[in-house]
Image 1 (cartoon, rainbow, N blue to C red):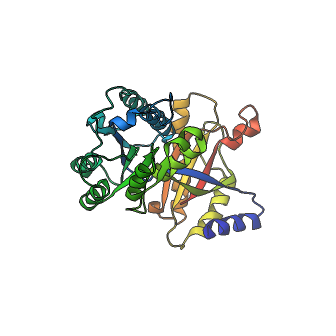
Image 2 (cartoon, rainbow, N blue to C red):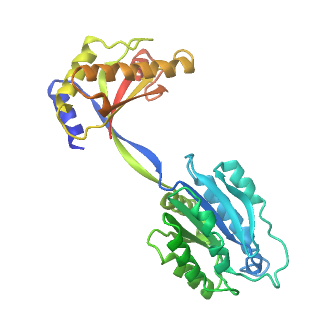
Image 3 (cartoon, one colour):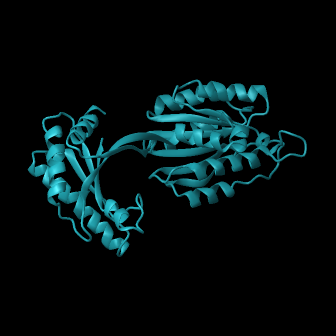
Amino acid sequence: MKLRSLVLSALLALGIAPMANAAEEVIPTVSSFDFLVDNSGSMLTSPLLNARSKMDLAKDVMARVNAQIPNLPYQGSVHLFSPDGTPQPFGNWDRAGMAQAIGRISTGGEVVGRMTNMASGLSDMTQEYAGMQKPAAAIIVSDGMANRGGDPVAAARAVYDSVPGLCFHVISMADKPEGQAVLDQIAALNPCSVSVKGADLLASDAAVKDFVERVFYGVVEEEVVILRGVNFAFDSAALNDKAKGILDEVAEVIKGKSSVKLVLEGWTDTTGPESYNMGLSQRRADSVKAYLEQKGIPASEMRAVGEGESTKYDNGTAEGRYLNRRVELIFE
């Protein structure tokens, strides 16, 4: 970021040694999701003689995906088709609750006569998907062997037409080319779709992480400036003259620049109760914000956040504790 570079250059010219680093933030790219699971007879068969059934393997795949979803405020559900079922109704996602719902999916039953009406399974979800918070992800878990009812690709297209903000993704349990072809055609309807093979997710943690990231979240890099000198005495949120001098220079560089957004993160060392330190860290961030506001930085361009105790530096030494009692500047 150009502005961050200006701040660093100005401080270095004054003989002040700031530290700069990048911090990653995970942000959700969907608000809600549904596992839409093929519950037909073909999913109860085994891809290999004497092997586990495709449904049994699919449950393991979904469990692995669920375990990698980041702790963000999603809504989630699990639905079955051919025949229909709802192991997990739509609601706030909870990792443990979702794991239990996946575990409740039956892997037994009659195979003969349990046909796959995939078109109906998709179209019947139109109203449910219309009520989901958007953006929404519908993750189809199937072998693609549609052998009853209409065209599942046409059904998926119709759902897209009726539900803006929805994206179908595919976890393929296909063991026949014709089944894979159906799933590929559904995935090709929308460039938002992510299509993977269940076998790959079972074999590779990296593949699971990649799938989850592409469907559920993104990572943005924040630019952080740690101002050595904007540190605090023990149990204090007061700025000393050295800290004020540094902040004066920061304010001069920032003033008048357009679209400046600053997050001021306050920290403490680990001395004292954690709950008290959380409040102290907020007071430190507020102190820096108030000072920069006095120097002409609009309050609307700054956000003060208390982060509590820091372990970035060694709390076992006086120097480390001093460095942990700080405020960091993050340029958004």
